[in-house]
Amino acid sequence: MSMNDARHSPYSDPRHHEPLVRAVEADVASIARAVTNVIGHYRAEDLDPSTASEIHLRTVAEILDADQSRHQLSLAEPRPPRDRVQGCCRDHSLLAVSILRSHDVAARTRVGFASYFLPDWWCDHVVTEVWEDGRWRRFDPEFVDGGADFSPHDLDRSGDGAFLTAAQAWLGWRRGERDLTNFGVGPDVPELSGPDFVRDYVIYEAAHLAGDELLLWDVWGGMDNPDESIDLELIDRLAGLLVTDEEQAVALYLADERLHPGTEVTRLDPLGGPAAVEALPARGETAP
Image (cartoon, rainbow, N blue to C red):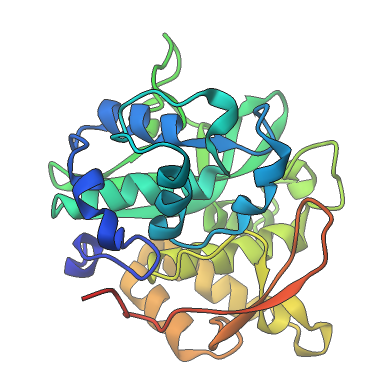
């Protein structure tokens, strides 16, 4: 665990909404209730079409600005489901991390793939990890309750096959142990699956561990420009470090310009809108 995991990144910092965030109890069940109350998944829920652009909100402060513009309520007070802020797993997990860090608890987002949404498919997914009892407890804040065979609030106790990090999926493929054709957004969008898709998610995994909790449709470097393609050996090295030495993985991500973004990214639009070049907050920059 790094001490930085208990400090806000520019993305998790709630800024002027700190009192709202701190009012949520720092236990997993309370966090799951709050984040699913505030944020609705744009692909899974019936949300107001006029707020679709909210999926591009980068920071917890911006997400809560949108929420509070419609609901001047605590994060625990029920919202009409259709009026929730539009987002995805990245946003649920980032808000969960924000709540935990606001209580001085080490937490981080983890990028990978989940097997529990669709049969025979590994959906791209972001979950939350909290440092607890000397280990990283991995949980899915999109689930308020679990089931007899599924423990969303402690995924490592759900048995093999609940969640794989992007690095684990990639290395399994490179060893010939996995077929990545069913790793991606969903079987309805086969173009967003497979080895190239998972390769990019290895980079996202490193970015999130480094405190760059970027959108899952941000692209940069070799992800954005085929002329700057990222060689397999570099991804192998990064993935290996993500599994065996996270500190060195973050160091590699920060040192290699092929892996980390500069001051801006190209933001794609999963809803079919035009791409846009967007500036990023300076790394390590948080509100005073």
